[in-house]
Image (cartoon, rainbow, N blue to C red; front, side, top):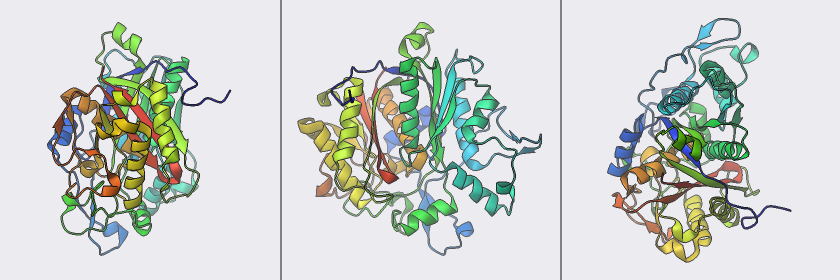
Length: 414
């Protein structure tokens, strides 16, 4: 029988007991939570010297990547050592910090998995090698992917894989980890993802007319749902989670940041890069996530929208939220934290799950900053400019990526 949103039993939620992050808004949960609730922007003007373009470009970079013992430098196959490139540094630091924060979980345990959401890992490896005038792309010796290298360095002997689903990659990683735990394939799982700001990515998104072309105030450039939005602002960073069965977490009295209760995934199957204006499949992803978690639309206290600030994408998502939640949509607060963090691309979904955990922790809804003139095509219960006090127990987090990769996560307070 084909499984539909109404034809399977809700899955048991899994506990989030470890958090690690390296982001434009900070490198720990308290700092990021404070920045989100204060409406603080991480967007600034960046130097485009490597891209050879005279235009002003805004983005949300990471200012400092905390080093973690045992991860840097990386070990190459021939016994030589080399500094890990920026993407590996981001993901490695966040992964090690997530594992370290989950007191009582040992990397040496035989059934700890790793699922890393990375949308364009090989492209970034080749780009870094090219910019360094290197020939590494023609040489063997390195293990094939960041997930495998991190697993080896951390001493993980469970399954280690990479998931690529464009802007939804790190959310897909969380969904895969949730399924592994539900099936009993692992006892605990590290999951999440990250991305970097790179010349190739900036050029590609700029040429696709996906990036904002504003050149006035960097902090005003990311404008989800606003009538004057003209594209997204790139960000970078990584967010990783340690997931384990809730019963196991309670048994060892570990801190539980929240619960991952369900996930829904669909594909638009329409275009490689253009967002689908018809919200049917995005709607279905939200409905599947609600069914997977056993949650009614009226139980949703907050929606963290994908909403990057593109004219078509924001409007299509607003329609999907209204279609999936029905009459509950009028009451549910919605915001896009990309207005502050920029779009972390492969890492966006994991970072926005962190924003939902921050809402649980603070009992506040983070705002959409720069929402000065809400577009009537994006009619929702927007939380504009300032955080809003609320009783937040259950949240939806949407991620809709290039190629029509649609994802919705349901998170619950511990």
